[in-house]
Length: 187
View (cartoon, rainbow, N blue to C red):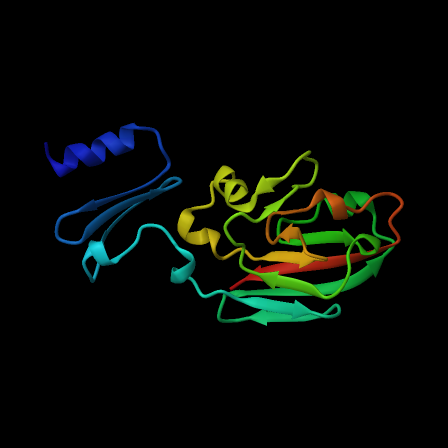
């Protein structure tokens, strides 16, 4: 049974996210449509194919008022600005890195941090909560990229999985007065 046959079986399985460790520090990884064959510098026994909390630098930023967070080490910036008189059509057509919140439904300070195992929120338009990790998996975000997306918290609840979707509880409606606009830029 050759390693080539093993790799062919993995490809034929239809799964779009897997990793195969071979002799001589060779790793074959599939993430979405990409197939990466790499030779690691150290023994694969010392490397984890999964990211644990210990593998990533935990971060947390406190936002006391609208402004800019520069998280250079983590590779992102988020700007927060207060707006009013927004057209609902413009809000719903904003890009994935832009979010709008009803100012009456949030409270400062906001917390921007890594998502943690077990974190949950209710994505816009859904009933019931969903785990952040599950949401990212369902949206085909490769495992190694999932830690790049921070969450924004207001009053102890997650209001935005930055770059993806807001929590349904803070959505802008026709009755909304002031809105908070957030823009995520990945470095």
